[in-house]
Length: 323
Image (cartoon, rainbow, N blue to C red; front, side, top):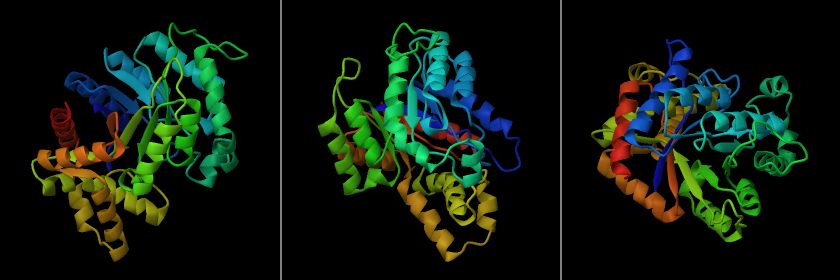
């Protein structure tokens, strides 16, 4: 499998939110040195635990500090934007960093009603997603009724962040997919990926189906240490289910000092079990299993943790496992 990183610019308790962005840039520089294929960034709006709401702006900053690694969005949430504006943003990135830019698009809208209202979007915005994706592709390729500028020498590659119906849309449109979440570990999910491949409509630019799997991967000296490294993200996810708000990452010592209800414990353990966390041998075994069941062409590790040093070491160890 090819190997890439998805960085969500996670913020950390007690630290300035700007460090979430500078940390993403520094991580991209290291990923390039280590030989990662791509470095993608995310779009989240009004989320306390995530600093990045604008992938194009962050990618411009990362592009200025790197020279070879591909840059992309995981993803731009198309219901929040007009296709022409997205096309112009990514054509501008392509003009600045030719041959290095990817556009990943998703169909999520704001997490809460106030956020959706602030974005001038609603849940019905996803109804036109397939048509919007098609329009965006035409704009990127120079085939639309209007011409988006700057005109690119070559089309910006586009992928779909997809599960369920999204996989069907990607197959019809002949687009690569990025798949994450519980679907990776279920028989139904494996069948949905297989159905995507069977139903894929090839094009001149994308002649074959392409599947990227995205999940948290934590590598440490032993399994117990890796699960501790994974704990802050699992804790934040579990707490968001309780409070409706995705919080900044907390240190392990702080998490361990807090009371854990039985429900919270179960949610944390479920998140830890879904992550690929362990020693190099454990992670290699689980990734081999994942590759066999999904036939993945690429692994995009979406790892976040409070300990930046541990994250650096994990990225380095993962690069040694996936060669």
